[in-house]
Length: 427
Ligand code: HOZ
Image (cartoon, rainbow, N blue to C red; front, side):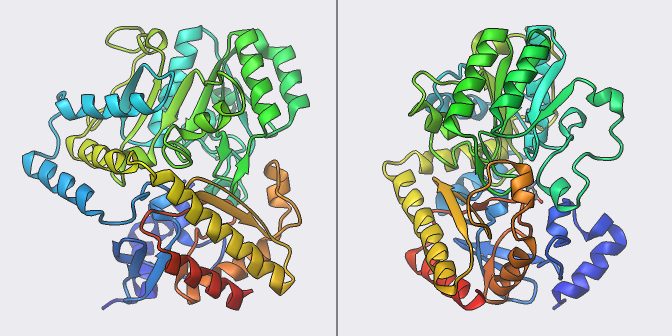
């Protein structure tokens, strides 16, 4: 049996940094990444046989926990029928129908293989549909690693302190305008100056790549009004929040308090694939018909709508659509955040947390940050020590302060209690 350290050293010889996605390298928190051997329900086991309660959930997709029997059966059956055809299948239609049924305003979607691909394609579609070039994004939001969106981004870029990637020429991002999240004055000014040139505004409605930060309701309401008034499309990146914070995604959360609220284009990933490489972007029929083969906006993919991935996504959606699913998930997530908050209060440590559905975040700070620089000002050293304190006690949080956390339906009350007990000891 190899240790995590031996595997990490071996990995670094053949893979840059030893990982295939930077945040996994533990650079933010220090120490040795855990090499995962297997997972079941709410638990992961590393190469050394150590068990962890998993609050990463593959960065969001594993909303049912690992190895859910109905999903496993669907995947095994689909795999036996063929891995990939590069041709249409009935299951793609079923998955598209299922996604559309849960998200009001979506009339058509296209399936792709990753959140990056979906966000990149949504921007191209917005530009093609409006005939405009400029876009607004917000500091600390991460929309995958397409060039035009890799400016002042969160997630791994925040972790490594270079929020705009090298290798992205200035000309490529000359049409990208970056504003502070939740800053109404900057939003008004940007629309006043560029409103008629804006193809779209892309936003994580609840940002999950600078920990967990909600767009305020007044900010979202004004953003919707400004987009409509200037003919710019509002693009919701729901890769993390879609089918995670509610069955109808974050847009349904805002629609509860802003009558008639809807984005123009929605981007999904993670949960809709149930752990397989699958993502999607969707909109009204009018806008989606700009896409090839009907319209002039080109977009394609060999593995798009992959039959095994769609089986996994469809089986996952069938489970999460069952009555009471989100109520139970939200209650368990809330009990985790409340338990951590009480543990910190008892230890005399400044701590704030927030959650929606099965997604949560917390900061070592006196109040919830509203934007990226406020997140950066929270106590990172304390987070890092807390992370290791929990890891040593068998609790696996995201290895960076800049990431949201995820609870699954497989997390039991006992798991939450064990996590809170570990937090008390660590604090
Ligand atoms: N970009 C992801 C976190 N926001 C990390 C994905 C991964 O490392 O798997």
